[in-house]
View (tube, rainbow, N blue to C red):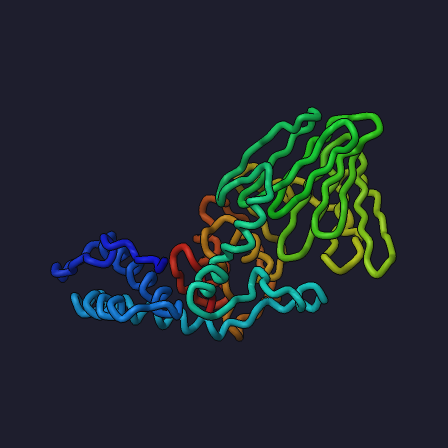
Length: 331
């Protein structure tokens, strides 16, 4: 069955030259839906005629359509974030790799497909902008940051958790013989009792020991590496690499998200924007020529992530173009 766009969105008239911001926003949504539909390769003649009637009904409709079409054309020239790991090169869909074509474009640009798959597998999830605390059936607790998902398998024989996406802090209840194991990518973080934080972002896992010992291990190229972290120590690993010690860190900075803040100190611009992206419904795309390694610093509140993106970008002499709910383009 061929899908139809909602008729109430296709039949709006724009006779008042002083259109309200609400009406303009609605027309922008209508234009975006037509862009997706017309590029889907599944358009019947009657829908083309319907589109022409909508476009010609009011000047605002035609202007909105051209504006949205120009934005989509810009997306086709975006360079994906460089990632030299073998897994990233072979993966058909990455967080910043896009399938440019029709409905697949819309899904890929919005990052919908991987998110839906991950959250379908999850036992606990948080929405964008949400923080939540859950009790596990072994007495342990987990605090989850924005846009996060975990799968839990705890019984008398094992205490296993998989971090599918996002960030969480674990309060591990002692259980003789069964440590809590949190898997992320191809590594494991293990604690018999205590606290540790773990974040999975852009194929990188960061583990911070907060209380008690936390062991971080993985296997790569048939070689297994294991690091034992003391409180205030941090380990980092990627999908195709061994964990390495990041030394002592500022725990308050690591856990700032629990107070609704996010802190950057001399961080690469691309990394800072990737962190802020977790608090927004849009993907953040960097156009060719935007220097990703530029260092930035600042303290922001997580409920004003878009303002933070604007601030960091403007300091670099750049601007953003926003397609609400889909993407933010930095040029």
